[in-house]
Length: 615
Image (tube, rainbow, N blue to C red; front, side, top):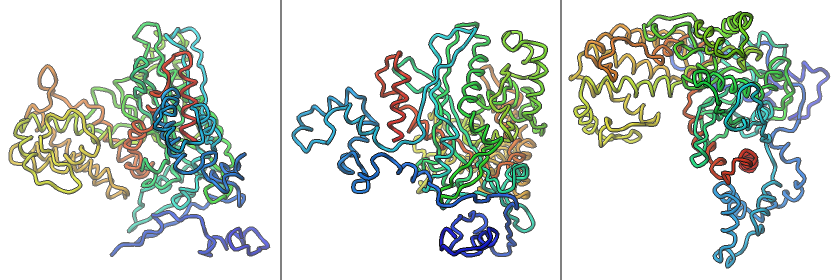
């Protein structure tokens, strides 16, 4: 036994001992299985029979691999080596994260610095040498992408690191040792299956059924969002892409301060010198090509497996399927290769959005089959002709999706419903505007100003009609009080339609679901569709040219997919974009803004800055 050193004659006896002896069973038990049954509640759980074998003990985890370093003997006495101590390390960290080399040199030459106890490093280059001596994570690299046949305004550079290396780095991080799940499991509550973490989902069991006995699923969760990364260098825009694993408990994973997410790439958005009608198609193809490069080793591991060490030093046989991808609507359409007038998750098209009907899911196999048949008739690089034929099938014209050879990857399943954009921003962009039209902006502001202040909730002392942009938290604060705020002024059917949508959004944020609660959530959406006529009757849905007589809203169509997605993915709230947006704000823009802004060496500078920030 690796814990108590008791010898056993057979592996089966050791496994029984590790399972039954609480002193030696160091593998964390999922929170859902530890939760006691409530009053009048019958609760039962069980693991998948084929999952999670251990193939070796006492292997170096992420921290121990970082310790195996040239200067480890010096760090036994000073953990901040080559810096003299914590104070000097904090100074170095501040300088590296906030100033460029020229600014650091000017700071170190200040008389104020020289008059005090000087740091060990005397120059900016010496500071950088010290930083490079610290232990490193997965290295960043830059790859130039050739664009044969189409000219770009500037060379196309992909800044990235190996997604499999990043996955192993996170999987073996001892910080998460007590918050990891390695085995699919079922939780039955009063005869109904409970869905919470991804490991409790139907998809987890389906994948485990197809893997070899003893394999461990390492579920890949990706997120990306188009964002400007510089202001001075021509307003450069990119798609920063983040990765985490669903083995980590969702409440831990959702905290930006837990560092469970890692940035794996900055996807370029090249400026093609061509007809603007198909420039966006070429950009989408480039994005898929870059994703293919970044995730190549992850795809191989998903197909045949790879050895991975968990935080406890146990060797596991890991498979890396893509199980969830968090993105806003335009990126979802780019990922699934559908046109802008088609739903990325169902077979519905623009005129059918928001009609309340449930359409068949848009499966990845169906998309690939359509692209294959189209490719036989038309060369995909005859871009204009191929794009026109693809639009007739409600496809964008991307012919090689990055997920096409990723085992178990299906956009109909891995495109997770997203609360921030699909629910909260939908509420702000549409529902709140309907209320302003019916109640009146001044009256609505007066009612919000008159509400009592409550700890933990924003009080809108200036009203809400003047606010152009809000955080997800402020969206939720308005949703809490919008129904009683409009009651008594708006038509009762209008109030009931709004209340049904607020109920749906509230129920969708639950950390756990059962078939009964999913049906209850779906009934709230159905209630909205029954009373939405009151919104049109009040002429609350308006455009620039007057009242709009339909509900062809893409995000409203996406709400219908929530009930189908929960059994496949678990609770929706664990895949919210709140975390990735905080990561965009805190991590992604700093390295780009600290370069010298010389285009010839710009990407190389960014790579070096990202590596130093990682150390």
